[in-house]
Length: 251
Image (cartoon, rainbow, N blue to C red):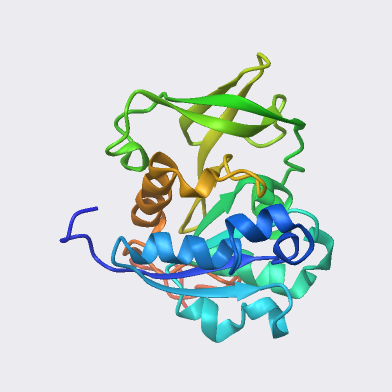
């Protein structure tokens, strides 16, 4: 990443369950997936913090989210343990401008499904198969610095149909050794916030140690970070005073 890239405040959230229960995951990510991802993003010059399911408010208090430009979310087997109030808090901050990067099995995260308005279901298979990611939108900032395609040597297969809304932009499509394909890099806007779903990242494979994957994660921070704009309306409001005079109208 360029040294001129502005730093953003990034929070990496992880349910932090697999690392405590599966030795294979603990070996790859001894301090948790969230800690590893925070280090990857810090290498690009960003200010990072982590949060986990087990913390009060899952580590996602109003103050934390208010100070977060981009929230990264990794979850898998504990989606239902996320409190509805926290999920709604995250979704509200996205609509007001915070970026959200949803990783791998986070497709079933409560905030993601709420923001998309669909279940985000898919098919899957865990067979240590090869995945090739094709960059199909080479002009997109998230694809910056990547080759036309690259291989993830060991991957969990995700297959279509993927029950999400049609992406605003589709950056990556994956092909798997078993023949399936999948929309692996989906961009959305909800309110003022930008959302990026990125498929790779199964916990028992060293996916997040791969250079190309790390480049995508770093690029995503730049794309998803808040941009200036008009204030986002948080509730309905009456506007009795018009912007210009209306003939015959008296407030």
